[in-house]
Image: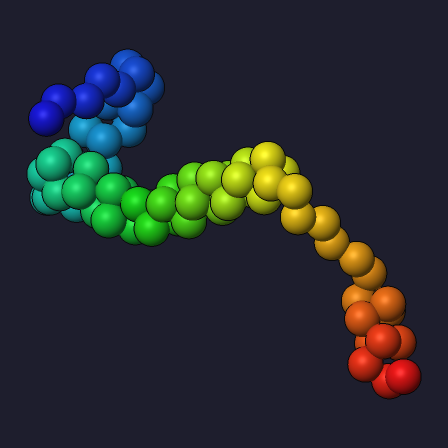
Length: 71
């Protein structure tokens, strides 16, 4: 796998690596590890919303549901 980073991102990684004594690869892996779950959740949610909007399902206010349950 290869990735393309902007010149600014490369410079920031190089600075961080130099200051901490860790490799740029370490920090790229850390970034992926820290944010991959968030990305998965976001795109999963987008997919669910798209499927919901394409379906014939509908919603109703919670107040209607509670009124029906109280009746």
